[in-house]
Amino acid sequence: MNKISRRRFIKKAMIAGAAVTAFPTVLIPKTGAARARETITHPNVDNLRVVGIIDDRMTKAKELGSSWARQEKLVNKEAVWENIDRLSCSLAKTKKPGEAWRTIFIKPPRKSWSDTVVAIKTNNIAQQHTHSAVMAKICHVLSDILGVKTSNIHIYDACHGSNLSRSTPFAGLPKGCRIEDKWGGSKTFAAVPEPWKKGEGKAKCLKHLVNGSVDILINIAMCKGHSGRFGGFTMSMKNHFGTFSPKPGHQDGSLGYLLAINKTPEILGSMDNRTGRVLFPRQQLCLIDALWASKKGPVLLFFVLIIDVFVIRICLEFRYSNFEFPRP
Image 1: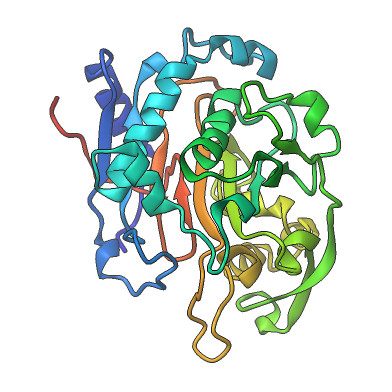
Image 2 (image 1 turned 90 degrees about the vertical axis):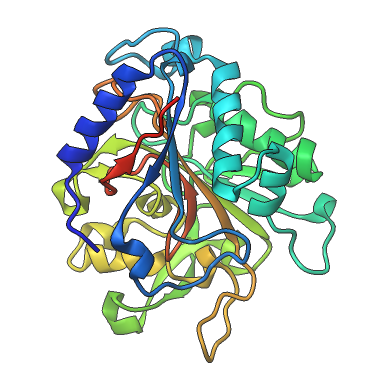
């Protein structure tokens, strides 16, 4: 894969954003990744397809350093919901949102949608959290389009979720959705593959993923500044430091640990022990809420849909460059 320049990507995105202030623009990347070896984790969607959108209608104003409560008042819910639907259509290559969501989300075998259990990993550290419009949209897709029982939708952060339901009381969720706080925390050991400890280590993980009681995992992360060890930003892969214990991620071999936990059956889904092939995808969607990025406010207002070799995710992804900005 070609070397990625975050600076070049941001520069292109800002130029494009200035040119399309009246309406959102879908971004489609051009990279050499299509030639790379891949692990198929989803049968319906190309692992390497990436789409994104720029639309400054998603917030009513650009305020730096604002609190989550203040940001909630500035978010334009209608624009966010419309754009997430548009991104789902672009990812699934269809014109109808309902059809797109039924392509992205796959019902577990021998279960009805009403009996399907969904876990949503959010990020509750510090002050920048998922916005209600984003969380509510995904929960309504699950309940209104797919038919998941709302009491089977669990929102958690196993590391920093102690006060999740109080500090981030998501508005607009379908009645019955459960904000689980830490949901018991990361206390159950799970085997972690290579490259961490040569594939011979174990780490603590959320019990509900280890015992298989969760059918579908959704990863909603933030676009936030972080140490240079992880590229300066924390996004969807590192968000599972709140699913698995984050402690090994702050010790020697931390990058290997980050990669390894995202290759586990707890995240990817059940696998064939002989071939390592994913039999049924558990993590079917990742979303990075980038309405406000890091601590610098909403300079760029967009999401990116991405499916890659390890995860299927909707996110803002600074790693990719050479975006194609289609004309209106």
